[in-house]
Image (tube, rainbow, N blue to C red; front, side, top):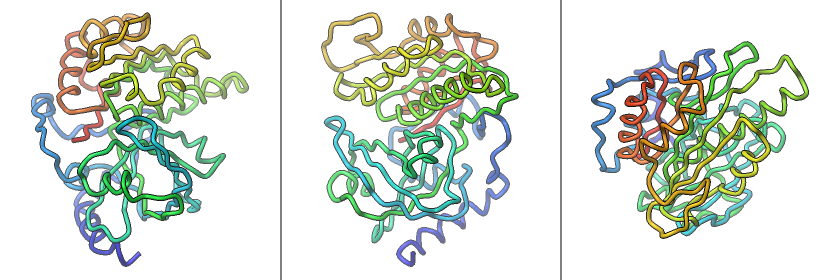
Length: 312
C-alpha cells in the first residue's frame, strides 16, 4: 500500500485531530452537527477537497482492498460499480460512504454506498453509483476503470446513518434525494425493506415506521434505481415514493412530477408521517439541500430531525 502513504499521512494527520468522533453512538440515527443553521445554508458552489470537507466525520481505522467485479452505465452520466471486499472487518451502516483510493493517484474522493450490510454479508460486495465529473478520481471511474482493478476503500460518515436496534422507536423517515444523492437514500430504503422482512419472520425484530421518498433528477434517464425503488414501494404499504424531473418535458402522473421538490411536495409527504417522531435525511447539491431545509423548517420540523449529506 506504499502508493497510498502520502494520502494516508494527510488523512491520519487530519483525522487525529478529531479522534473523539471516531466512535459511532448506539443511536439508531447517528449524526454530528458541527455548524449552525445559518452557516449550514451558506453553501458555496466550488468543488472543495473531500478530506477537508469530511475531516470531522467518523472514519473506520484501516483501508481495505476492493476488487471491481462489475462496471456498467446506468444513465448518460452515471456508472455503476460493484466491488468485492475480502476483509472480514469491513462493515458499514446504511447511508454511509467510502473514501475511494486509486493506485497511482495522489487525490482521492468519497462515494456514498447504495447497498445494505445484509447484501454485503450475503455476497461480500457493495455498490457505488458514480456521476461523471472532471474530478480526477471520478473521471478515472468513467474513463479508465476496468473489471479486475483493485482500489482502496475506507468506510466513513456520520451525518446519514440508519441502523436501528430492536428496542428503538419506530421512527417515520422522510428521504429527500437530488441527482446522485440517491445513493445513501436507496441504501436506507433497502434497509427498511430488509427490516420489514425480518419483522415478518421475527416479531421481536425492529419495526420500521412509515417511509416517504422524494427523488429529483434532471431527466427520466437520470432517475437511477427508479424501477427497483418502485418495486420496493409496491411491496410494502408503509413505503411511498414520488419522482421529480426538472429539465425534461414529461407527462406528469400520480407519482412523477415535472418540477423540483418544492414546499408543497414536502408538506404533502409530511402529512402522511408522524411529524413528532420523524427523521429527515437529505442528500444532493448544496443549493437543493438549503432550499429543502427551509421548507422542512416551515413545516415545523426541528433542526435535530434533519440530517444532511453535502457533496460539492
